[in-house]
Length: 507
Image (cartoon, rainbow, N blue to C red; front, side):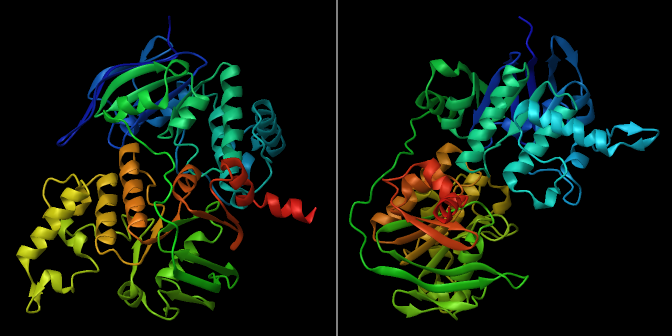
């Protein structure tokens, strides 16, 4: 048969790295084809080669049976490929229609025909169920609608093959389901969709076939209806992985973190956290769910001392730390795994060993007579690298050489090593592959079971439901619900995240 898209023997090398090794990929017309693999498996490199961002060192690309060579993304677009990246590429001050038709505007008598542009975009949106107002300003749209605008851009340019890179990373369950319906409509209309993801539940729900990459190789090409997540995981990692819910071994004990009537003002003077109040007890994980931008980050910054609260109180193990600085809060027993492991969690130019010591370098265990005890530092570093399975060529090398998963392990190891009463984990598995996710989950559970109190913010509802003892839902800066994860599912939590329960109550 003639494939819609075929890659034969694609190889790409970087200094010291074989990113893709003789990869073969065949995508059929009008199918949804998932591509999965751990971090570093070669997914991003392969799609970048396909989209013309740089050329392969070896191998050939075929579109509908014809060999092609792309020197830029414009060549790929002209050949009928479209790609929606994780970071959207839109002009916020322009309308939806203006973004969609940019550089391909319909004209009338030499001038841009704005009426025709709006009509064409509306027709395209209606045809594929992409609910969006062509005349709305992009800067006023939520992230789920922004993604639809990106899809419209590709369809307007007549993309027959649409590549979606981690498309559900920032979507609520309801937005995800709407996206899946759009993808199915595209397939039914004869278009082909390549779906890059690490979420195996989504692979099973939306794809027709799945290709698994591992260490730069394409190790499996599977019919989705004939496989299951366990088999896909085995191909990805070489072992079984367990991400199912694990209940605490003991009932939560006394309150470690107490937050009372906490309000935080944003730069515009409006409250971004509104009168928040809750407790986190020893032996439990409290998960915070919410659509990005609803006050979760500002709440965590206030708890960690990075932002000053306007009103309210924060108690840690019975001690008032409301006015304490970052160092004072760490000394009181607060550990913090930040969302940004690159800019906040590590010092990129410092070594792996030095990053493992950050925040603990003044402790007696690594000092002798006011100087670093090199032997103690070396022993501590070796132990953490071994216990947390940090893959590094040398602990004296810069931490910037580590993969995202291993960089996160450095942060997790450093913050968990001293068993403080409270651990705040913000997006602890963002961007990690399934093996690294399982590891971070196991460490959070171990911390909980040893009596620690954990406050976790995550955009992954499956993670929130699997790990949390209780779930706090934030909407527009307020905690609008406290939920039992055993009694709710993702769609119900998603309704609270979007304020739907509040609207129903008002009605």
